[in-house]
Length: 296
Image: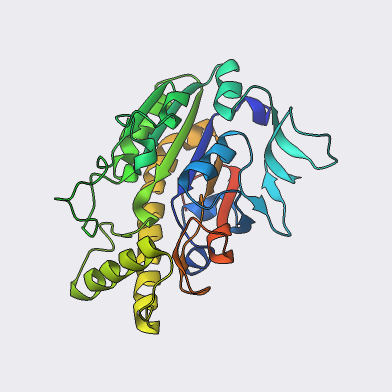
């Protein structure tokens, strides 16, 4: 039987996805990995969160353990550079990053993203450099002529699930990372497209998000319900697309971790968005397991 260290790996981040969104959403493909766990992330926005993840510090489970390959672990990965601990990890990795470790074990390192921290055209972006091959599907940083509130399809990473599955299967052993912007504001996907109400609500959320605190009244209960419903549908679309990927690669029985990099606040602590340490931002969903068996 292969060790977890030698398995193919898929790491997926659902950008900005709240934990309560994952509780509400129908996610039959993610549920193949096991139940959704409540976890705590080390970062409150994309860059610091992924910096921690690539160093092995994926969100920490709160009061639970990972069941992977029939065994229970406190963590999926743990760096050999970390201080000694009695906690168990599925994979104890060496090297500066998860990608370095798995590259040394013969994995081809593939990445894909859709938010601008993963745009390799931006000179300051170093995250794409960590991968042998990186696919960026998002727009470049917006200009004054672009609107942020828009329907999305081709710019969503998981629209290209079949293409990414082909890249994964092209090598004898692969490490695939996917950043999914569908659950990030404006939360639009082919299952959650704009209408007059959602467009107006999202414009208000952007203003609140940009200001963090706002002197005028915040969002009302109906507007917050609209935003939560948008993100639920975005997660359900991501689950549908992950089903395409999972069906294509299931015979390889990869180790799979799917989590949010951070959540989103909708006024619970009188602020909006992310990039600050509120529980709605730091508490995230996480699924983990070895993918195997027939699709559900």
